[in-house]
Length: 148
Image (cartoon, rainbow, N blue to C red):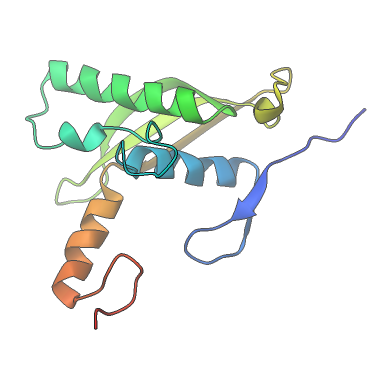
């Protein structure tokens, strides 16, 4: 039996190694929080979910958000296929988040979809927006360093 070849990378905040599902979770967060047309040479990378966040949460808006998020993940993350997605309240103030579940394919990036693991996770829908707003008041730029 051959060993599973897990993808490995670095945590964006701590720079510690990430392997397997933890790395995929970070990848999903990056895909969902990256605006379309902002990555040089990868203009189609990301999602346009922020354009939906100013809207009232109606059934039509929810379907549009679901479609945007699922399409973005299925396009840019070969190791994960979403099976269910639902809005959840993450804070007492009503901070909106997403709970998602699906199938994790550890070797999906290599085209091997025979190894599958069911997984679930939740994350804030606009985590980076809050970071930018909070740090703009403090004079911190996008690099995390104080502005000169």
